[in-house]
Every structure is written in structure tokens, then in C-alpha cells.
Image (spheres, rainbow, N blue to C red):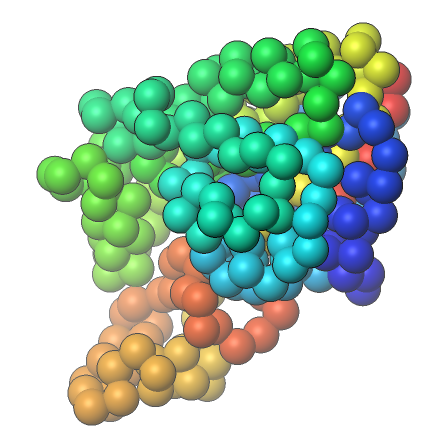
Length: 263
């Protein structure tokens, strides 16, 4: 499987490039929803991400200067890259358009900012916060206050409760559909402006897997003192792994889509 990092740097070896990053996109779920991109011609392959979570992905992927404006809804981007001189510019959409009610940033606002740079002919990286929770769709699976911790609360509920886990998968796929519809609108405009377009993700998402041995290794780092107590509900299948732990061992979180879109 090819390195996503190498493909990203190769892709930006030229002008008028648009890279769209879906946050925490499960490859199989993406395959179910790919038709929502519309009637574009495209080539889809699976590629190997640099890391299992956004923070480590940013640090391991963007290690050399890249001629692009990074328009992001994910607050990790300005936090980790702003002072490194890697990007031509970083535009933090969350600083202005954070939705307090939802606990996230809507993709429409990301598109609005990205289009301003595209009209100038800039190379652009667009980083949505979806399909990562909190969810845009109408679902009972909500986070608790404060809004910035809503996603963490949703994951905890899905890990511990089967009903919440099933609702998580449904709402996650709805969130993915929402992101793809917004990506489609941006792609339409990009192609009209003469852009080459690629859609990918920073890392995948675990949607409730039962993997006792891998869970043991994961919890060994997370809860080394209370390891057996923490692992017991996972070992018998009462809890399932939902999310994208940074210290997860295995390729389940590393395979992500790489979609080259054509007019």
C-alpha cells in the first residue's frame, strides 16, 4: 500500500491543487457513500496514513514546506503547524465559526473560506471535522457540556453501550454523507477553476471492533496500573473499541481513501 505522505507531496508539485481531508474516515463506510460525490470520474485507491490520530498525523505527514494554504476546521492544525513554517498560510475556521450548539464546525463554513483562496489560484488543503463526531444529523447520541468535550463523551457512550454504539454507526455514516455532499459542491467549483482535486482522510475510525489482544496492548499504555480491570469488559465483548486511539497497534486505523477526481 502506498504512502499517503509521499502522494501528498507529489500532488502539490504543481499549481492549482485542492486536497480535501475528511476527518476520521472509515474506508469501508466511505465505500458505501462514495456515490454521493456525484458523477465525477475518479480513481480510488487505499493508501497508508502516517498515524492513527490527527495530532500525530500532522506531525508525521507535514515535515517539509508545502506550497499550500491550509483551511481547517480542526483546531489541531494551527496548534501544531502554525509556528513551523510548513504551510504558506493556515486559516483556522474554528476560531470564527465554531458552533457552540453542535460542538463542531460546519463544512459549509470551511467551503466558504476555501473558495476565497481558490479564487486567487492558491493551492489549498481543506480539512473538514466530519465524519468525526459530534454529529450534524438529528440523533439522540449527543455529548455533554462543555461543547468542546462533546465528541469525547459520544465516544465513551458508544464504547460502553450497544444501543449507543449502533446509533453511533448510523449517525457517523450520516455525518460522512454530509461531508461528502459538501465536498462535492467544492469539487464542482474547483474543477471549473481548473484545479486538480484529491480527497483523502487523516486516519480511519474504529466502529466497534472486538479485538482482545490489540485492546490489551492499547490499554497497557493507557491504563498500565489498572490494566486487568480496564481490559475485562473489552475481553468479554461488553465494551467495543470506537474511535481512533493514538497508540493503537494495527493497520485498521491507517488505511484511508485516496480519490483522484476528474471533470
